Length: 379
Ligand SMILES: Cc1cc2nc3c(=O)[nH]c(=O)nc-3n(C[C@H](O)[C@H](O)[C@H](O)COP(=O)(O)OP(=O)(O)OC[C@H]3O[C@@H](n4cnc5c(N)ncnc54)[C@H](O)[C@@H]3O)c2cc1C
Image (tube, rainbow, N blue to C red; front, side, top):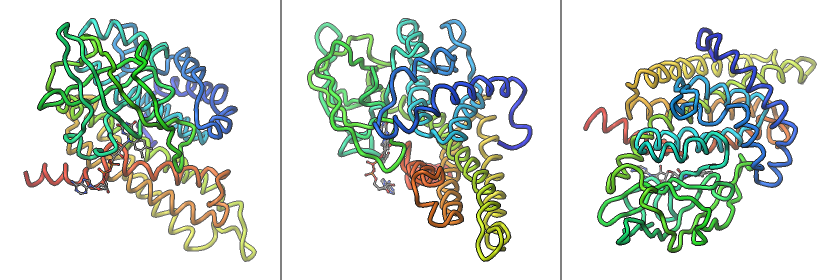
């Protein structure tokens, strides 16, 4: 990240993360990629190193690190080691589910769930998308009906759910009568909570993505997050942080790929000279570096706004739109400079190409983000 972005405390934290990635992630990552699954022991190791639930306040046993730069360091170190799927799995847990519990959960819910968020005994998923509804969450069909004792019965189907198989609980958006509500639903003791097919993604294979089926799943009254009927509002409220996290991760990946490409073009030769000597190579890299710096500054400004609580929906949409489209283009440029090797999956640039392709889709497609920005501009 650009000069002056991180402070000493962040760099100390980076040491812990780098050691964790070197010891616990990098040696096993290829195996997980082939198995399309990461083991629980990875989550436990992350927990032991204090890397889960960084934003959990001290009163709930956490470190209260709401400064997003700490979480970006985790992404940077994973990108440096070409272990991108681990970042996606952690994002869902920390950038999407956790903010919902922190912002809208009761004290009792926080006491129950937050320690388990941190010690990896409650790995979580976000279960918003359905086969018939992704961008348009208003039209989801999964339904929760209230029972006479205040508990709920959940029926429906979700898809594209990250940590869907490995997770212990899902943040579920469901229809409740004419409106929608948000629930944290635990798998344990609920035989009707069934992961379905594991989906075979283009990239980021080490993180599991699956269908989820709910058949007469009983949710205790304490599983409802916030007030009944306000689920869409809550889901919307956590978007800015989630989108900032994804945008920042996209920029981080582009930066790591640019670094690797700078090394590659100096080593690879054609027509008797390093390909770094061709004007096209130099111009492509110069343009990418200039755009990277602009994207980094945009991330920096958004992180600052996030810290002082002023990051708006439009700010986050602009950031994610710009960052994810830039990263897609930048990684493609770098892949081209690798020639045929860029197309071979053992090269990090090929893995990154497949990973960043998701960034303009997940967490709000670029088209949906443009609608958000246009709404802010024009009403
Ligand atoms: C690998 C992966 C992981 C994912 N992980 C999760 C997860 O953990 N949890 C979860 O809940 N979801 C997850 N998703 C789902 C993801 O958020 C959705 O795919 C995304 O929101 C788009 O929804 P959709 O796929 O239904 O596309 P659609 O909404 O059907 O969109 C199809 C096309 O229409 C365009 N479109 C839609 N509405 C408009 C509009 N108003 N104006 C202009 N164009 C429009 C879209 O931009 C897109 O180009 C994941 C998806 C993938 C691929």
